[in-house]
Length: 263
Image (cartoon, rainbow, N blue to C red; front, top):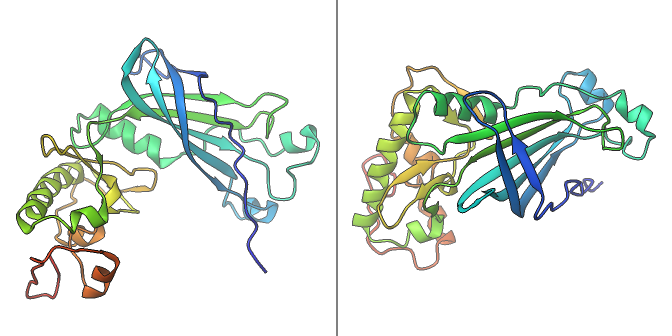
């Protein structure tokens, strides 16, 4: 039986304004939405929620700008509670009974807040966040909404195929910058759990590297130490030549180490 396709429920909101003001550390700011970039729902059934897998929610990512400063771009994440599967068309009173009025602990906020407040220079800075509750006409009346805004740093996500087309010397330079940057993050105790090359933000003009992707992160403690397997996790080294078939025009100067890895 094919899986149910879950349609997006968050509007595009282009031109709308979001205000964040969580504490004195994050002053009141107004953000204007430029573009909706993605949405990923995490639906659950009533039985799932009873098994403490809930609440059900959807996550949207938007590009926005600081009101009054068009050159200051940022990313906005919206976490919003959604109804249990099969209750989407129930009356508002029924859906309101599902409401969780407090944000259930999305790790991205905890990670970015901790990294920013403790001076980590290797990740984008948290610029603001805001908790709110859905009104009586919304998806889950009284349910939670979390707005999370972080800076758009200089550079672009590293493209896996483009990286493996670069000459060896340039690949090594990126690896060394990545090692330096990622080692800094490990000293703060958080680590992305779904790594990929695209979570490496490379500023080609300066060679600077930042690490993003804390939507799925874990606190590993401040005793975290560098391990070369991080090159594999972020696809900066390959464990097998099989992956090279997915790289048209791969560089001709690939190197093999004694453990079989490809560099």
